[in-house]
Image (cartoon, rainbow, N blue to C red; front, side, top):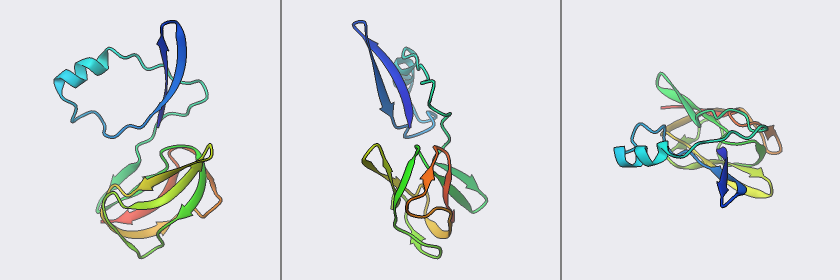
Length: 128
C-alpha cells in the first residue's frame, strides 16, 4: 500500500493506494496518464515492498501494510490457491485480507495472531 498526497483546489488529501501490479502490464495510454501524477511520499510511510518474492519453486508472502495479525487462515502443510486469503490484518480498525500470489503448499507461517507487523514483513512461505 502506498500513501499519496493529492492537492485539489488548494486542499491536500492523503490517499492510500494498493498497487496491483508492477506497472509492466500498463498500456501506453494508461502509462502516459500515470506519468502526469506526481507521487509525494508520506514522511512516516516506509518504502513499499512487493507482496510476494519469488524463489525457485516458491515464494514468500509479505505484509502489504503495517498492522496486527487478526486471523491466520492457513498452517504449514496446507495447500493454497492463487488469490486465496491466507491472513487477515487489522490496521486502523479495518480488516485487510492478504491473499496468496501463487498456488502451492504452505511451508511455514512466520507470524501468529496478535503479532504486530510492518509493511514488507514476511508472513509465510509457500512452495509451488
